[in-house]
Amino acid sequence: MLKYDIHNHTHYSPCSNLKPEILLKVAKKKGFNGIGIVDHHTIKGALKVKGMNKDKDFEVIVGSEITTNYGDVLCLYINKDIKSRNFFSLVDEVKKQDGLIIIPHPFRKSLNKNHTFKIPIEKIKNKIDAIECFNARMLPLGDNEKAQRLAKKLNIAGTGGSDAHFRFEIGTGWTTFEGNFRKALKRKETKYHGRIFLGPFGGLLSYLRNRLRLYKIPE
Ligand SMILES: [Zn+2]
Ligand SMILES: [Zn+2]
Image (cartoon, rainbow, N blue to C red; front, side, top):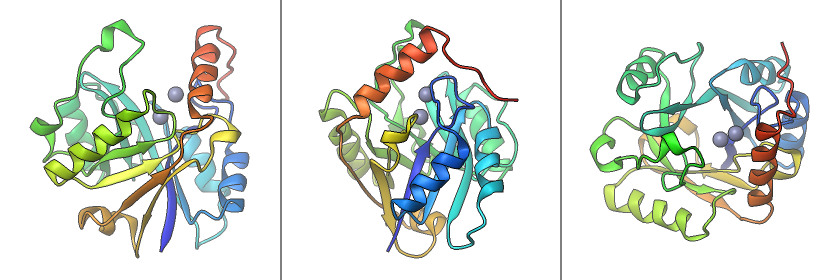
């Protein structure tokens, strides 16, 4: 059985201070077999981590998290930045790169007034590869369970991730599967796990970091 935390950010996201080398080191130390890096609107952080990884038994998935008209979308296994902010053109763009699409935290309410949408999972279920059924930052607590019920009802694969933006969050949510992650997702055989402990505190730190402009995005 393999264990991946597929939802991580680095300091290429304004809401995170995680250095790529720290993310890689901590995930490996915690016994993970792979990680996904999904900085907001850039694959720079993911490429850095991938470049640093010398262990062929540890997979680094290059991705990014894009805010679309339907809310946040995780794009994995991509090799170029995603330009689209419209959900359906994003799907085309990601498929052209042979990437995967996962809807993170499908029930999270946005703090941004422009993003009060609710993602119509039922309508788009054939366009996506999974929904995130466990997100370690999720509040209120019942929202992960709502996502889990929805995935079961619609027979969509489920994943788990920490949504780590800070060191203490790494590995607090994860996905397990046998063999190959992409194939396990296609077969809908992934399992999700995690615990919500300091995640919401991480969410608050991200909010403040963003709001008070405490970040400096590296070159
Ligand atoms: Zn963020
Ligand atoms: Zn995220």
